[in-house]
Length: 106
Image (cartoon, rainbow, N blue to C red; front, side):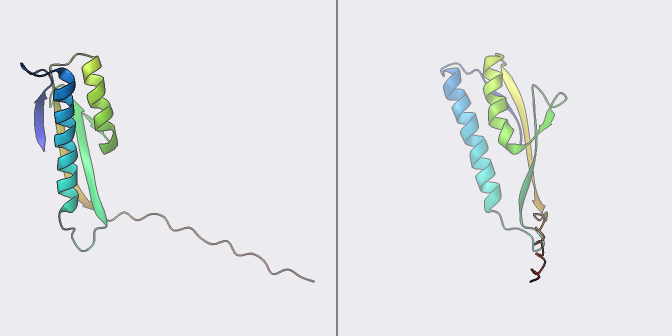
C-alpha cells in the first residue's frame, strides 16, 4: 500500500477522518496477514514508511503508525504519506539453552 491520505476533508471532523484512516490501515494489516505464507516463512513482516510526502517518509515499525497519525493532527498536517509493504519472514526466536545443574555430591 502506497497512499497519500487527506487529513482534512470538507464535511468531516478531523477526528472522524483520522479514525477512518486508522481503520483502513488496520484492515490492510489484517488482510495481508490472512494471505498464505510460503513454506519457509513463519509470519508476515511489514516494512512501513511515514511522512508528509514520499520523499520525506521515514521508516517506522508497524505498531508506531497509529501513534504517528495521532501526532499529525497535533501538528496540523493536511495530508500524510503511508507506505506499507509485506514480506514473509523466517526469523525464529532464539532458543533458550537449558542450564545444566551439576549433580550434588554427598
